[in-house]
Image (cartoon, rainbow, N blue to C red; front, side):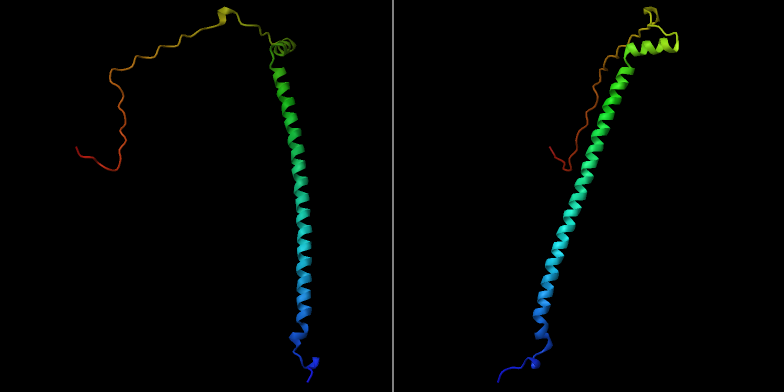
Length: 126
């Protein structure tokens, strides 16, 4: 006697449909996750690029400011500013220079400093 479909259990009829829908959800979810990850990679790449551009700009500004400081500290520029501001400064004369003699270190004492003996956990007996 042939089996009738109406006599089969409901789980047997919906089994293949459930498997197909689960497989579609799995493939679709994987695709969405892949696209989301690619978007995140793109955004991180953009942030890295922006920060590299900012770093290069800051390094160029630093170099420019260092050059400006070196120029402003040069003797020629300092002399020009002294004359400009009428500060009345002039180069020092040899009479204005005071030389100090460094004292000689005392001779070493006759007793050498004690040397520390490293102690180990064990004792040796003679």
